[in-house]
Structure formats: structure tokens, C-alpha cells
Image (cartoon, rainbow, N blue to C red):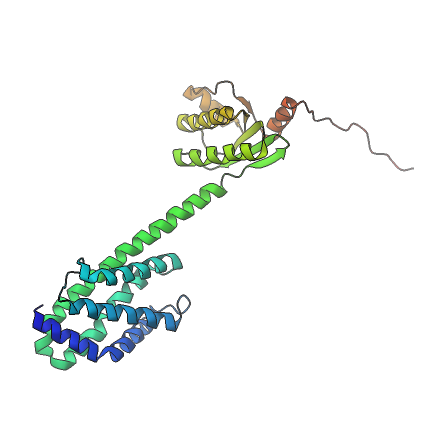
Length: 289
């Protein structure tokens, strides 16, 4: 794009700015990409106005490479819009269409001036807007990945609740597969609870763990060892027959770890360690005469 053609393009865009802005917004609404449930008309107009202004300013610099400093404000605004839409429930196509829908009003405006004179400009501008759209798609993907990672972290924290069963006794029921990342969360959660409550016994219940292999057993041993360093004894409950057979077949050793079939059995054993006992009330209910 020559400096002369760029100057003429900028002049035309500035002269037709109000109609370009209105047509751009109308095009998004007619295509169903404006999402009034997620953004108000005023906010949509503000975003469109900011981007159209920045597009004109960047073109006025004479630079058509969107990776250059002249396009930094444009990139920053697109990054902000894409990130907010990724976190706000917009689809990828709706987000990218926000940029691509700018083509039609601009090209229609330029063609109306002089189709022959503006054909080369339109082709280069088409390529430029495509680049902005691809940039928007990349940023949107980064935003979605951040959302997914945050949700995964929140699920990890929610899936490792520590329950106080008695003074000095905590229970950590595990559900799902244990991997290295989750084991780290489990250890941190358990150790923090031991500090906060001053408990000396922790029951790790694996009833909800579907399978136990060498790796899972190693993670359990690491968690037990970490708790022992904090001065707490650990019991493991939820050892089902299938899991017991698997552990034996794998040759996995759980050194000096008390295991129980159920959480109730582990709780009784924990009470015994504290010098407390579960006593059955043998008194029969009185019968009326």
C-alpha cells in the first residue's frame, strides 16, 4: 500500500466514520453476533468505536504490519476484548466475527468511491483485517486455556475436603484418580488442616479412588510421609478386595501404615489410639405395660 493510497484510505475512513460505525454494529446484529445477553448496546458501540479509531490511527502511520509498534494500541485493545469474551461465555466464532464483520462496511464504502482505484487497497486491507482476526483468535484461545486451568485448580481444591471427625482426628476422603499434581494439592490441604486443628491422626479414605496402581500407591506413601513429618499418624481406609489383590499382585508395600476396609473401621481405630472407645449401649428399650 503506497503512502498516497494509504493517505486517501485514511481520509475516506475518517470522512465516513459515522456511517462505518453504524453499519459495522448493524452487521453484527443482523448476523446474530452481537449477543445482547452478554453485552449492552452502549458497550458494543464503545468497543467498535475504539477499535475503528485505532485502526484509522494505525493506518495513518503508514505501517501495515500489525506486529509493529504502530499497532500496539490496537493489539492491546483486541487482547482486552478477546480475553473478556473468552471469560464471559462468547464462542470463538462470535469473537472472531467481531473483527471480520468490519470488512463489509469498509469495503462497501471504498467501492462506492471508485471501484477501480480502490481494488488494490481493498485487497491489502482484507489481508490486514484477516491478520487482526487471527490475532484475536489466538488471544481468545489463551483466555479459554486460562479459564480451564483455573477451573481445574478449583475442582482440585473442592475434591480434597478435609473433615474433622473428632478432636484430634481428621478425615481426607479422596474421589477420582490420584496424579502428581493432585497429590501435591492433597498434601498441602492435609498439612494445612493438621496445623490449623492441631490434630494428630489423619484418615485417608480411598473408597472413591477407582484403581490403585504402583503410581497411586507411591502418591499415598508420599502423603503419609509428609503427615508424619508434621507429627501425625495416618490410617488408610477404603481398601476393597479388588484393591487389596491389586496391591499384592503389584508387590507394592505400604510400610507401617494401618489399613482398614471402611472409614468407620478406621475411625474406631483412630479413637482407640486416642484412648477412647466406642461402647455399645446394651440396654434394651423399656416396654410398656
